[in-house]
Amino acid sequence: MANIIAVIWDFDKTLVDGYMQDPIFEEYNVDATAFWREVASLPEKYMKEQGVKVNKDTIYLNQFIKYAKQGVFPGLNNAKLKTFGARLKLYPGIPELFQKTKELVLKNPQYQKYDIKVEHYVVSTGMTPIIEGSVVMDYVDGVWGCDLIEEGEGENRIISELGYTIDNTSKTRAIFEINKGSNIHPEIDVNAAMPEEARRVHFRNMIYIADGPSDIPAFSLVHANGGSTFAIYPKGDERAFRQVELLRASGRIDTYAEADYTENSQSYMWISSKIKEIADRICVEEKSRIKETVKDTPKHLNT
Image (cartoon, rainbow, N blue to C red; front, side):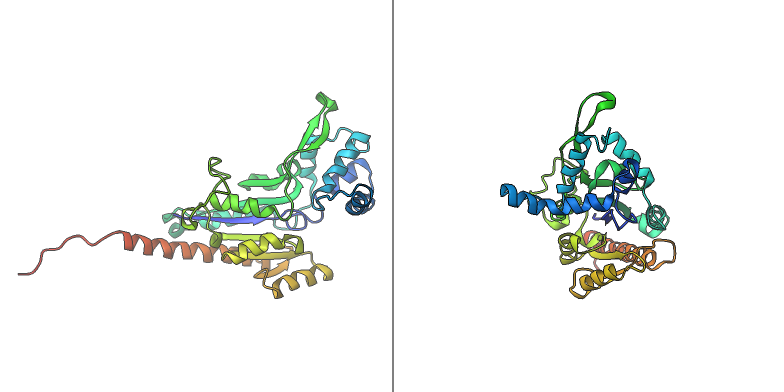
């Protein structure tokens, strides 16, 4: 029975008002604007100087490693990164929305009759330790992000190498892992052929929520396979508004709203309504399946 509803979230500017790395710059008194400007120049720099292509989504991680090794970010390791998660400025209504949407299904007897559940996942190009240090982890069922390898001993440990990375294209792999259940059952190869009906989370039972054009690959995958897509923009940000409107007009997303998840906000009502819609459909499908499976008992023939 495909009874799992998966709500899949981007992180920066979707759940967080800004970027997850902001507390790092504050801690070490580093100019964030200058840092990101330098990061933006790296693809052209490396191509011009060395003829080397870089991944524009994850090259920023090399810069954090470089700054840690140079002492600009002294003592920056995974444990330190995790502490920054507690300092993030989340949008209104987060993390409460996670709990409320889970309870929406858990407290409905009809949905529980078919053991329907809501699971929340974060798929981000950001740093996994920071996400894991945030309050959303009390309600999140899984995280895909970027992991960093350390060097050194004890208090001298610092981030030194890239480990696992996620970019805006490989987010689709994470979505397939959720779809096939590879995150729950590691023995399932995400590249293995599997009928949709045999997969743990059907695409039509997914809701993907993010903030803009960089998430087009993930939006497109979920939308094209019958799932629901929703975009967020900061209140009063006209440029961000135009971006999400373009996504809607081009058929990438179903709709969008301001980044406010408090109860009775447009975002809260749309997400809650969509979860109910999916849960109601699962109930109808399960009733139909059971009816088709259970045959009538034999009856005496009239003589």
